Amino acid sequence: GEHPDGYKGANVMPKPINQLDRDEVRRAFDHAAATYDAHAVLQREVCDRLLERLDYMTLQPQRVLDVGTGTGYGFARLRERYAEAEPYALDIAPAMLAATRTRFPREGWTRRALTLLGSRSAPQPQLVCADMERLPLAASSVNLVWSSLALQWAVDLESTLRGFHRVLAPGGLLMFATFGPDTLKELRAAFAELDDAPHVNRFADLHDIGDMLIGAGFSSPVMEMEMLTLTYADLKALMRDLKGIGAHNAAATRRRGLLGKSAWTRLEQAYEQNRQHGRLPATFEVIYGHAWVGDKSRREDGRQVIQLNIGERRRKLGLA
Image (cartoon, rainbow, N blue to C red):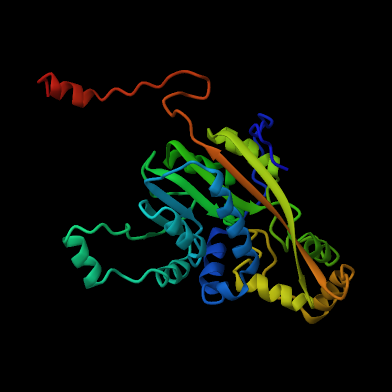
């Protein structure tokens, strides 16, 4: 549930639980760009719920960064909400960014003419192909970092959150949704009856993410969790949805190759134990969080950081 007074967690930083293959993540989302929107029912629902949380935030950002923008569904709505802000969309997969681009026609002659005549136009979206763990942005250059269902693909979540804190300006906001450990628990249990290999990615716990946010320097994180369940006629339909959005098993230690016919039959039989009212459930634990960036001129231990621009001072004194 929500912690109204801000998350207060332990000081012990959790170790990364998921060793993901970054190249496999990129390949999977590149391949899924063309089919993503047709299968992303849950992703759109979570994105809408995350957008609703912005209604309670007093924020007029000058620059907005959407991390893991996918095909641009959330990015388009952020741009509508903050029409005066400079919008940046970041994704690791070039094909996803190409799909995002189709939502925003290039500036035409009419728009350029209006600009020359003095009419103000909304800033054009900037598409950035990069890893969210290595943000190619200057420190304190962004006022809102937004991420809907992308953080579960971070190889090192703690490092990723530190990077978010670095690029956010004082007073800036981080808002995100990600998956928790009970996500796809039925599928994980069914695979466990086949072997001990990792077939379903593991996801960080709400409390661990709260600890990471505090360790990254954020102020008073607020965390929430809810369970959402999709139902399917059969296991093949679920697997088609997962493949369609690029949600492959990207664990570095994953088993390569497809399941054989015998293994697939056993997997179906194991999953059938979950059937209720003629449908197979797939559980998704969705974690929502937000946190603010405070005064960056002070360290975590309270000591103030004073930056001296020696070169500028020498020029003013005529010493340069």
